[in-house]
Image 1 (spheres, helix red, strand yellow):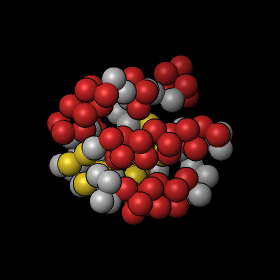
Image 2 (tube, rainbow, N blue to C red):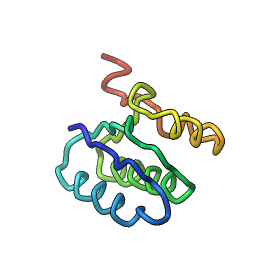
Image 3 (cartoon, rainbow, N blue to C red):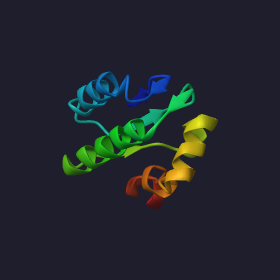
Image 4 (cartoon, helix red, strand yellow):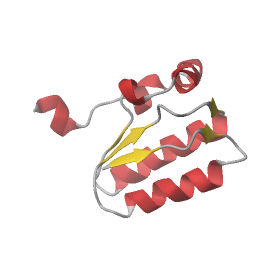
Length: 97
């Protein structure tokens, strides 16, 4: 299932983004985020993405954010925070397939 990430992942919008991510996780499917439209991101936005990834893993699913599905502002924020590898990993099924 592909989940389109909101254009703003900031402290002002993080509650709505978190709600959307958690609802998507309820589907019980592996998720791939499409964040090409993200124009603004801050630490709160990065935190919600990491929390959603951990929650997906705790439920036995994957939540991936392929580099090809990231906007330039998100790529820069991930790099500055040292989180590029934490979110841009392929699921084991893809890596072995």
